[in-house]
Amino acid sequence: MKVLRAGVIGVGHLGQHHARLYASIPGVTLVGVTDQSPERGQEIAGRHAAQFYRSPEELLKAVDLVSVAVPTSSHFAVAKRCLEAGTHVLVEKPIAVQPVEAHELVALAKAKGCRLQVGHSERFNPIMRLMRPHIQRPAFIEGHRQSSYSPRGTDVDVVLDLMIHDLDLVLSFGLGSVEEVRASGVAVLSPTIDIAQARIQFSSGCVANLTASRVSMNKMRRLRLFQRDHYLSIDFQTRQAVIVRRRILSGAPPELGTETFQGNTDEPLKLQLESFVQAIRSGSRPEVSGEDGAAALDVAHQILAAIAEHAARQSS
Image 1 (cartoon, rainbow, N blue to C red):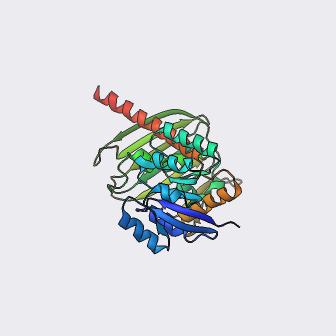
Image 2 (cartoon, rainbow, N blue to C red):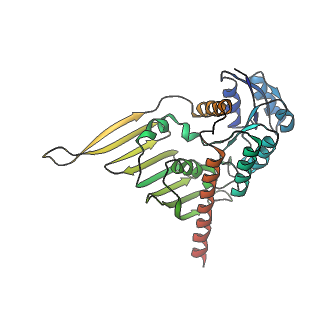
């Protein structure tokens, strides 16, 4: 088996973990990292016996695959450079800031024969993988994703920063095309939208109500799905889930039965990187492809447009 040479562009809060995990995956060697801060880059490289490269261009000459973990506003420019060099790319979520950029990356990856994966890590959360077989034609979905305020990530609004996780999950359930989007949002502590609520109606008839906030006191990562005769409640933070089913017994009124689930302690990011490596080795479509990332970004911008429309109506 050929040893794949990996690199990481941007080794800040999240990129440092990409470097750590590449160094631990069998059949993969962490060759090097690069970062805008030479001190930070050298620190992370030294931690894993890798090399620090002063520019992405130098790193790309030495690797087969790369993680792009730079600020969101730079995702497109950096990922494009990597794909043009013929390197397989895992770009952190969201794939880009603008839909046109996302679709350009998808087309470029196809033209270059490169795997392009997007870092929607909740797909790899053990509780999500455990519950996915139970998700069958939901009629209504309710999602809450909130965190306390941090300047990190505020180069984009909360829809691209947090809600994008749940958009990707909901789109992965096969609910059909988006028919209508209503939304509202407001900037509280940053120049961009810090709290947003969206109502998305799909051609299947399912409606998803999603709320995302980065100005909350408590952290929450929860999704509830309502289906015929039962509903599911999934907590991504505790990796716990509950299914409540209606049971009809002969000659007796309906009862509710509860079944609980606990996800294992596997690290979602490690599962994500292993999936990326496997897609490269097999030449298969990544589990969270560039097309998936572009689809989530398309809906995110429909939400942003709806928020702008709602704000215009309020001010008129």
